Image 1: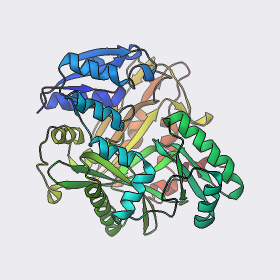
Image 2: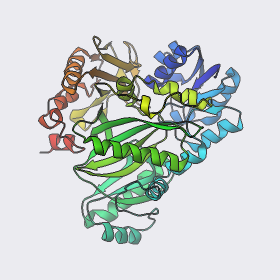
Image 3: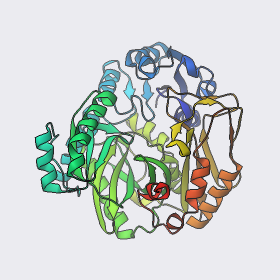
Image 4: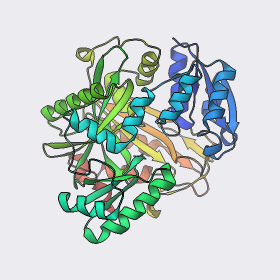
Length: 448
């Protein structure tokens, strides 16, 4: 096992990894920008290294500075968290060239899965269901029109290198195809440095279901069940839960089998998530997230498995010490993401200094956060302040505890708004309470 792990991230996920490393007796190094020098993760780490200014391109995304910090501190491995360099195969290759273990899948696997069009093709060949769409990236308006003629409308244009809800746009009809195609290519180039896009049939009124898997270097692959992530705004998740409500057991088992087959087909290693759209009994593969997910705590809560710990053990070359028959889920867990955003202004970010922050507590409440009084929600970074996770022996009790937790949460600061009040309303939506919600829930709430 590693003596020292460097954490190439910030915020709640950096603190989350520090805590598991401490449980395992592993020393930690947290790299940080100048803006994060007083962060909770920096305070908790054994060592910290300033790698640049607030601009993430000159700090958290600047691979040479991260590698230098690892070499200078004797870190044998780098845990990338999520976002930033976590799905960058070039960074994983640089780690290997410097004798540092990247906590994640091999770079060649990340490269294949990071190219969403390639991933779609690989999974289709492995027998996973996919929506009708282009098998290769679409480069011209004429090609886009031809694909659209075959698959029909509505359809969705997706960036090949996209992720995190960015680089995708729905096209309702033929009149919107050309401007949306051009705009998405421009967005993809600006956001990812890659303007390639592909087209896929858009499944309106579907649920977003994902399967958590773990795979080691010894041929063992297990799944940890499914999560429902259907409450979204602009394709980004706000509420997640496990197990997925009202999902037939046979369909859940089928999705899990697809995920395991897909992981084997691509030679996956580490923790990963296979995402699907589900409508009725029909399901279709969307993509693979080759990293730990923001919403991993709900799976940890119902399985009792520390996913970060398993990532580190797998990266160290250890085989999984449990098989599928030892994965058991108990009860229901729900997570709400508390973002520094104003839902009344189309979820505009609300950076500012927190004059007060009081996290909820009590029975079966977990809060993953890097916030504290005096901390600043910064405009340079993601707006996530905290993740509130509750558990109950059934869904009603898990949701009752979440309602109580949201009432207890206190976040104050000049100009700072959060998603908490909206999420409290969502929990009381009739469709959500009944487990009948899909990815259009928030759109329907805000429709005139």
